[in-house]
Image (cartoon, rainbow over the protein chains, first blue to last red):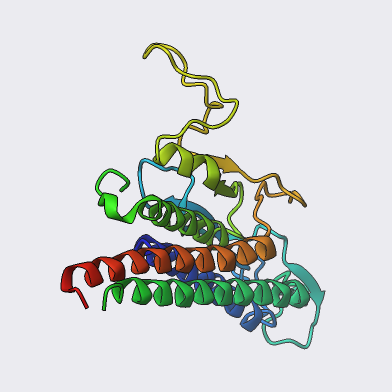
Length: 136
Length: 132
């Protein structure tokens, strides 16, 4: 039977890609948030992936693990909006530096990778079922 | 698994366990398509199968003493080889998504082929046992 480890590998990759989709959603949802203080403005987040060895005798082969969620250190964008109720004394507001196009590209890449993992899971499942039926 | 596979399966018993190993490798490659510094790997199937059935590769040196080097290239004792990246990426990842997906589809088909051969052996054995 195709090793059950493929299910672990594909499952961990799907979990990692969905974390990536979550961060994209969070970044896009907060793209329009402004703040009167550059310290409290929303910081775009991005997950950091790492290979997670399933078999200790074979490092470098295995699933994916999200080691941490990195906050972007990009300077917030300073805008002069004296009419904004959130503006500071000088009339400035601060918005997170989020590029919606880059976020959308990231989202598509994550969705495609997720699809590939689902396909892999389906193929493996079919092979496993065929193997279980040997001799019937 | 090759030691525990009954002899009645012949080469197909060894082949199917290697094909399964290869599927696992390709699955790992696809799963890590976005992991920085991941190096895609594959199984040298022909060499691994010959080793599994105890055959010498043509042109490979023979080990005449246990203390000698095995003659296999370093790191390739288990038949695992690194893929040469077609388009290297800046983050050190060498996975080519399309190539890996095509390889996975092909490997799945090859697994089915090996499975059919094993199944044929089982069926012949059943015919011999039941006599019908």
